[in-house]
Length: 128
Image (cartoon, rainbow, N blue to C red; front, side, top):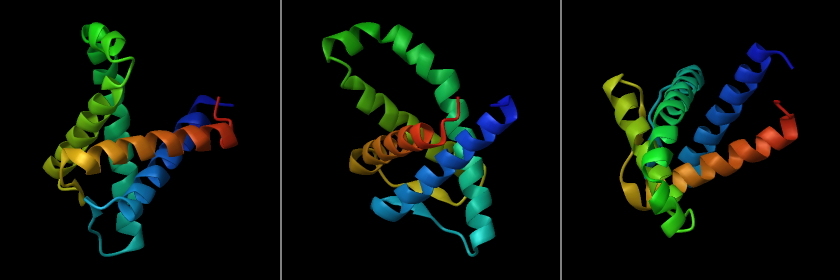
């Protein structure tokens, strides 16, 4: 699969996962007036989330390696929730209509749902 096609599939699956999170989890909001605005906002939030994860996740895992071992990886739920909140904050700074109310349960459950949905879609779509 070409690089561009893989990126587009990953972006679309992450946007779909964010859309599902706004529908299923209370405290995650997408306040748009039209479907077109919603699609653009979700795609931009997906890009932000991807960049946040690509830049910060390896640094956090390297620095917090002991915490990952000590908690048998459960600290990843906290880290992913915080990265989800950071994505919401950056989206707010860019005037995107995506908002997460609080860390627990909205951000943690949202990050968990987005992770599971993108993993399942990655299996189905075979983006590699």
